Length: 275
Image 1 (tube, rainbow, N blue to C red):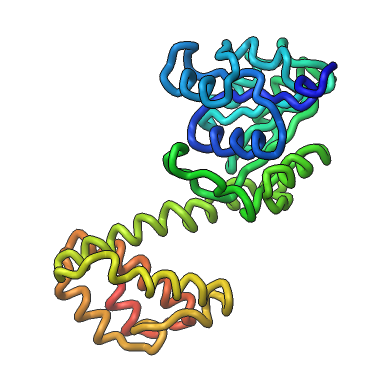
Image 2: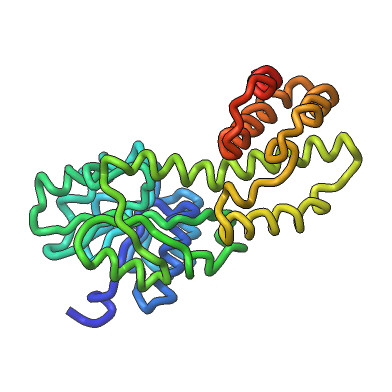
């Protein structure tokens, strides 16, 4: 076995997360030996194969020359992908998936037929956008891991900070990740809409948002909370609801109620205005 083969990995699912992890592995000295996607001639598969100068292959054949197979497919496809790659895996190899919500059981088809292959999961706690513009986002991020020690070593190779999440808590952990990223983006989308009605650009809120996030991680959410709910100003919240569009009420009230819980307020005026 030569050095290139020994450090070779294969990528199944050349989407945003898969490309980010593959880029990180390349930067750490690993070599991509195969790429598989929905089809051999799909645009994403061709682009990834060109990016890593690796052959595009079928899912069934992707593991023939790889010591590591990274499954970066959507969650619903992991089980079928694992079943398809199983026969072609190298003895002593490692297969990891990148799902935040799924546990090791997603790779049960491999455990059932290939006891000579290790299984793991590695979920980078990071958001990924256009892979042509968004490089190096893994370094310093945390990663939920499970499996043999090789998975933690892999996380360190990627510049990640690994931590363990039990399989029975994966969905809760992933829900927190979705709130931290996707819901935050949706919330800032509401900021953009409300500010737009007031003829104020979204950019004006950037220093406020960044300072708020810094305060949350420096002081904790409860100590970082300011504004009308924190000071018990029901009248101001009522004025907000009187002027913003009706279709914005549900989101505003939901977040104001969350702020109320954080502030420890449970008096009748708040229940009435946020009902």
